[in-house]
Image 1 (cartoon, rainbow, N blue to C red):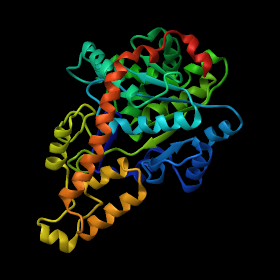
Image 2: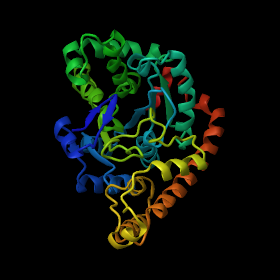
Image 3: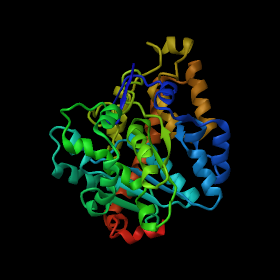
Image 4: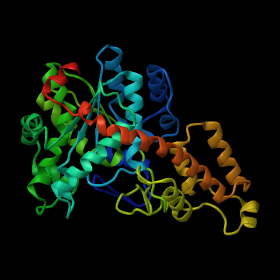
Length: 379
């Protein structure tokens, strides 16, 4: 059985089981069609079930149709380089921002991994904060609609609201939600209160309740379950959420339920050069092909377990091209090395462009970081 927590994902993940366990709702065809209609366009992450589950998304769209616009909230706890798996919720958040002209509050909880990860200093977290901000900006978020909220730098904005949350969360709740023991440090116990604040901080300053949508990986759901339990007691809306599947590591879905930055051989980072990408995919990507070319031509490959094909379901937007790759690989017409090369070309085209924008982003960071709380009156 897979392990899925906010700090660890291991093994083959059963997403249907997570829906039942976490008490979320699947995104059915009716909801998918509604999102598509209101957005004026479809997204392949929705068509292919990359975003597969939600909380109160139907309510949020009801509010939107009444004229009560929502804002987006997502984030990144800086502790290392950004890999392709980190980008999935951000890419979809960018699409939502573009289609709904929604403001985005992007939280960088730079204390989180310091509290939870041995050997990581606050100085380390600050270094990775600066680097991670470049990757977010490089995705093309609108600087006029995007605000970076950094926990240690904006503590004065966060803390007065965080203590209101913390007062309503018992230690027994935290232990049950996150599996903590009596040996957990005080910062780790308090942390979820800080992560709850962005979901309602704009409402506090705007003087009205503003709906919030949080796109995130399903592993982060425990934080927002606690948030949703508490906020009505503070006179605020529960945030809605939309959950995505994980991009598996290169070694395969059975062992790597989620790509991890701790193993560079199973992850591709946004700063990897073309040669590195090619080497990693060719050497480490789990194959669904046969032992020999002759056997593969005869029996074909298995796209369901082949990592190159599975990654293409995330990164190749063209449905017809993806179908051809699937059929050709399954029939044996397309060899494993050829399929891997398709992925390599796709990733390197994306990363070359991303790295150019990432370098240009160094001059733009100041436009994104919140200056003062007056920004929330625009939400």
